[in-house]
Image (cartoon, rainbow, N blue to C red; front, side, top):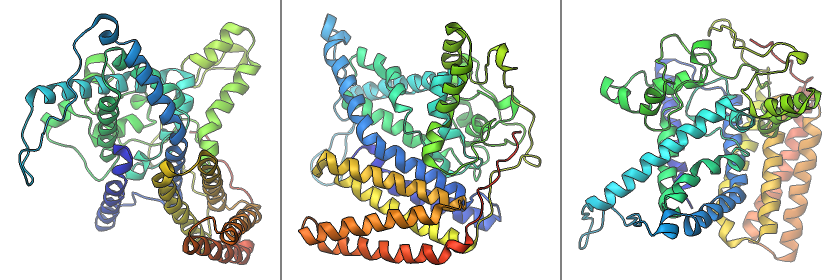
Length: 436
């Protein structure tokens, strides 16, 4: 288990704390549908990441072993021993200053690599198609921090190869990169205004990162920092928080579906490139700035002025019983996902693939319930019947622990009966909000 997965309990504790703060301050920082969407995308990202992480680590390690300056010219190796060695018995710890400097330099280099990855993910259409997932929420709270792409990792690994070329050991990079991502979790909040000026000058803070998530024209493509805001100050991309940010993307997603959230810009890129005449402009559609279109397809897209008072969020009406059903099914999928991630080392790949497929399908179905799609009840019944059948077959064959299998079968049957009773509450598909 990596450091990010190990931090998941802490993430949920902090989410709970932010909910308490919101309740005490009478501020609406969360919406159930949006938060389920955020957490669904984070869950799908972790599930798909089972496969992407293996490839990324393999490629990094390959470059570090055979293409690094240590392998090619015999440069000194990085000091990757622990900077806080245990001393004697008990809880005593010492300090290895040389190792601490080594780890600190790697952490700084990883943060610089993240800055350029993040910046180009806003400036190159293909990279934006992967990164857009994180920005497509129209809220700003700690669940948004977990709203991550499942496909961005196919492209982002390239930006960390310079660390491999410098010979940074793969375990050292993985730990530093994980700590970088953990730091970025807490800055996704409106519950904290500003930190002391000295910290605001050096660190990425909630105030700085709220600017980054704003669709206000003055906030577009600013504040790319991971941990240290000094990169934005150094490279001219810093913008302070002045006016209230409006969150989301200039072309709203208008869907809770995690699959569509991951694919919608890729689909739009494909359609635009297919309609674009000339290979040069086709390549510019893919690798140019987001929003650019050839003149033959009309004017390029530019951000429009927005305010929190005039911006219309995607929030289709949903009957309370359907909200409860969606929340229960999501929580069941979340628990199953955590169990699958923990069991990955002991499972064959066929079972991992089957589990990932079913859980992604489940989370997609939960989204159709949240959108009150007319066919959601039928899709849910089919999904639940499959779950009950598979659990029954495995139980009959003695191919798994009896208690969880019986529990899964009973849950599936009960949920199927529940959704059938709720079917009259489903309505037509929600209308798309007008672009702002």
